[in-house]
Length: 303
Length: 303
Image 1: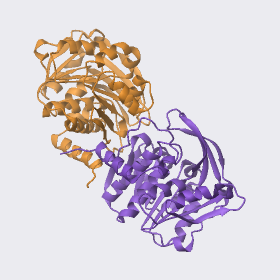
Image 2: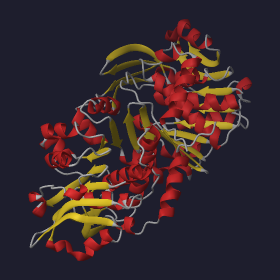
Image 3: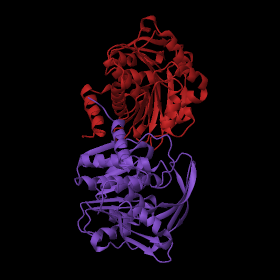
Image 4: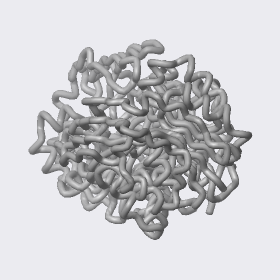
């Protein structure tokens, strides 16, 4: 099955209590596509970079079979940059600098040959652009969408319009509380599902993730990591693993959604072990299988 | 199997965003014994109350087959009182008043006939008293112990001595971080298990609970409640359900410990549905079985 990934490509400057990393390859589309590439072969990426992005970085995607036909390279343009610093507890971060650069003029035009994609994963970008993407694709089987507090606060009306077109909405717990204006996550989930997405995933970092569907709630554990080197991209990586797994199995039901949440969690648990997306370039399919088994073991009860 | 429960009996004044309740029956021993009484018949309670506690309240325990031979009624004494107010998010609370009253002179003497108890559950009291209890019992099969931030900060040395005698230690996430002086819960667990208890349970409220043993980690989900009326006693109720289930099955291994965590979570999920211990007096065995099944369903994956 083909997957269309739309989102940002970036250079990140990252600071965590364990070290720092400059000019690190990042952006939502980067993490989503890399994570999904462990599950499926046909991934089409749509995004924009500056000339400074370089062939070396583009080749990193090509080596993982990710098609870049929809990635526009702006001559003399500068790639989107983000600089952030994580606090000691790794749960909060400060944005030090955001340079939109070429992302400011990103128009999210989907090349004709990708408009038939069966699976669409919308990384965290302006909800207006997310909606524009969905207006160009013809009846995908599944639309997965991420966002962030910046858009929840800055473009609430536009986000609501996008949400009506989305099948699976993925956000974290603080974003869910912000969007639903409600502290109880279970009540949040009901309110957000009423906004459109039939399936909602609330990520809770070290506390795992919750999946809400018409069939009820699934509670996914978090992988018990003693060290989290860098949480950057963990949410996007989750979305990529989740969508990639579903595109691979080609069937969407309660049990494939539950497993997709565990595969998303599996991929995210690797992502945080190194800076940026480094770990995703050193990952083997066997490691994924092993860690997925560990996830099953974490909540296993034998009757 | 016989269970010895040692802890406080109290009158609580409770305020939550949903209402308030005065002179509510409370205390750690109260919740532990009530929860355990749904699993086993032979429960011996040790504690102290004032004459104001009244026969009506004592009868509430007797009706649930809880033996009060170890509960001292101090003539003219006043029962321990606690008043607390929960914040809007229900995760934080302020203590408005603590009146130790007869609890100030509680000496934790275990009557001779209870010293052979095979299961011991130590509610949240002074760790010096907890240790004194353990010096009086002869080789129990399992010692379960709870504590709180007040003792972690106020009697750290005494708590460490008690922990060396404990099999299962149950605390919440903020207490674990306070005790281990470490933000990462997985690292906390390693450090706390090095203090003595081979088995550690970290309760995380709306995020479920983690069980740490020599075999690894078990992640228990939380029951998805839209309303939590009153969290008072949820932790004690967890401990009572946990220990009661283990005393019932009479065997301690990885799988019975995991199931005990789910039964503890099940009992706690009922407790928070009403003020104080009210819900535990209206609970049927069938409701417990049904909710336990819901807990299994929350993390079920079919291969």
